[in-house]
Structure formats: C-alpha cells, structure tokens
Length: 501
Image 1: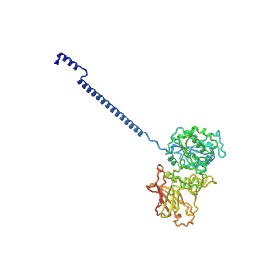
Image 2 (image 1 turned 180 degrees about the horizontal axis):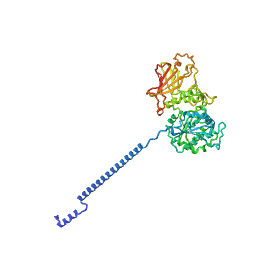
Image 3 (image 1 turned 135 degrees about the vertical axis):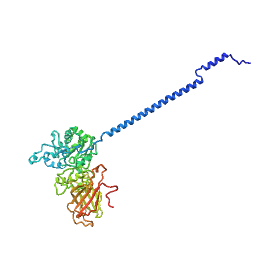
Image 4 (image 1 turned 60 degrees about the vertical axis):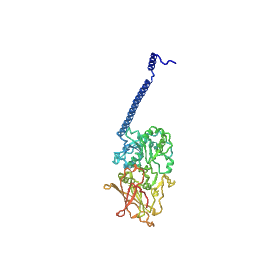
C-alpha cells in the first residue's frame, strides 16, 4: 500500500508558494476592477470636457452672430439716389447759347442741381446790352479745351463732335471728390424731367459700370450709327465708376476713331472698348422726327418720361403756342404728379360707345366706337420720318397710320389747367377741345363734339415706378356738368382691366 501522508513542513512550503504568486485569482479580479473603474472615470472626465468646450464654441458663434447683426442694424442703410447726386454736362456753342438757354430755364433748378454748360468759345455779351443777367438761373458756363490736335475725317460732320464727346471727361475732372453718383449728358435743346431721371437712376448701382440711354426713333439712324449707342440729344447717364474709367482712357480712344460722325458715337466706341453695353431706358427721347409729335406723346410707352430733344425741329407740343410756352404748360402737372406725366390710360364710355384715351397732364382723346387697347396704345403717325424719303413706318416701335375715315378720327382735348384738391388729396386737370373732326360721319353713335371739356381726377402716386410697370386704369364718371366729361384715373384694382363687358 502506497504512502499518502506527507511531511507537514512540505505542505507549509507548498501553501506559502501558492499564496505568494503575483497572479493569484483574487488579485487579478481586484486589478481588473480597478483598471475598468479608472478608465471609466477618465472617459467621463474627457466627455464632460468636450461637451463644455463644444458648448463654449457654440456660445461664441452665437455671440459673434449677434454682434454681426447688431453691427448691421447700427450701420445706416445706403441713402437713396437724389437730385444732388447727379451732375449734368450740357453741350452747347457760343453761336446757339443765347437762344437755347431758354430751354434750360424751363427745367434747371439752380438751388438743387449741379452741372456745367460747355461752349466752344466765350459767348457774345448780348445780355449786358439787353440789361439782363440770367446767370443765376442757369448752370455755370465753361469753355472746352482745345481739340485741334484730334483728327476728324468724316466728310459729313463737324470737328466739334470731338469737343462735345469730351464733355464727360471734362465734367468729371471738375468734381474734385464731391459726392456724385451719376453724370448725365444732354444738349442745349434738351429738356429733362429731373424727378423721373432720379427715379430711373435709383434702380442702378452707381458703383458699377452703367451706360444708360436710348435709341433713335429712326430705324435707319440706328443702323447708320448703332443700336448700342445712347443718343446724346435725348441724353444719357454714366455711373461715377464708369465715368472715372472713361476719363482715364477717352483721349487715347478718340484718336482711334477719326472717321466717326458725331460725339455720341465716339462715346459709344469707347464704351465698346471698356466692354460696357447700353442699358436702354425708353423715357430718353431723341425725337429724330419732324412735325407733330402728338402721336408719340399721347401713346407714351409705360415708362417714366425723362427727356425731350430736337425742340427746334418738332412743332410745339401744344397748339397755338411757341415751343417755350408749350413746355411751360407742362410745369404745373409736373409739379403735381411728375411720375404720371404723359402716362396713358384707356377706358370706355359704355353708354355712348366711346373709347377714351387719357395722356395725363397733356391731352385726352375721345373716339367714336370701341377701339381695342392694342390699337390705342400704338402711336398714330402724326409725325414724319427723319429721312423723309424713306419708309414712313421705318421707326423702332410700332406705329399706325392716320385713318382717312372721318368717323375714326379722335376728338382731341389739350391740357388747360390743373390744380390739387386738398379735400380729396387728388389732382383735377382740365382739357379743352381743340378743333373738330369732319362732321360728315354717318355712324349711328353719339357725337362727342358736344363735349367741350374733360376733367380728369387722379390721386398722385409717387411710388408708381417702384412697382412692376403697368398702365393706370381709368373710368368715365357720371356727371351733371353740361358739355363736360369726368374721368377718374388711378391704380388698377384687383381683376380690373380694359375690357368692355
């Protein structure tokens, strides 16, 4: 039988060896528990620190955003363009200045406007002999620089075109850092509607390159010169930023175009080199036409009236007046409601089957029968083409011939007076009949000849052009006034249109 008992000392030695081993089970359990506890503790601290940092960053972002918005709120908004931001450069000559300056007196406001008239030489001293001194009513006069060093090779034109084309640069050099946003060029026989000029230029950023004007009314004129050109007689506007760029290179540019005809095509040639196109605003009127411009003004496009040119060529815009007297008549409606000046409205007198066209502040037309707006808004050819032997309809807009049917000729009423009614806060303008159509009309329609006066009621809307372009609506009002028609003109109501129902 084998021996199973052992020496007690041997057992003690074995036991001590087992208990002293570094990786005994209790110690391992304790070690792993402590390790995981410490890891969890450190991870928790890191998570809390990250969350705190993230929160701090978010708060900083919000605070910065708030400061940004507060700074925006505290900084003043850009001021709207006003009349004093515009400087006019008017091209004239010593030979014509004595006569043409009367046109400037019609629209120039010396207390509110800035500008210069450029002459080729000092004018004759006629005013001193006449005992007149109207210098305070007009812009200051400057003498243009000598341009004899510039070649001019066009056989049909005149070397003065070079001088006049430099009006932009010479006017710019006089600014001397003054607050200017726009330079506007025009001729001495151009009349500007300054309030509407401001309205149009307010749409554009003067810090950008803008060249704003309009074409000739003659298709052939635009072919000979350019559809990309702003005609100088009707006037054109150049932003300050563009005027500065033009001034730096214009003289070099002019030397490259000795064969061009006029001044405005030379300016356009330099604009082409600068890469700036014409921004067209149809309210600038070159009036390359002859005769009576009634058809153009009575059906003016839906855009602000900005300028009228060639006033020595066209007939007076009001009959039996000189051109100066006729233009003076426009001053009253201009002061009452410049935005609506010569804007057309169309409506019907349903009971008498008449079509009524109101060119506010200028004229009213009453037609027998119902004429569609598409026809009435098309200018009738009361005027002649600039090239009299060319196509009589060769204009840059649609026109319609004058009807030979006496029944289709309108009864025309021209502005006679206009006042502001404080009680209704509206304007009341009166128009009196001028001439009579042929009386041999056989239509069985009421005869408008018994209407001797038309009264138009209209509330001024200075914000008319801040909205999408739309023709005003009108309505024939019932009245007990003898030989008088009353019409109301105003902004179209919802779902209102020119429709005979």
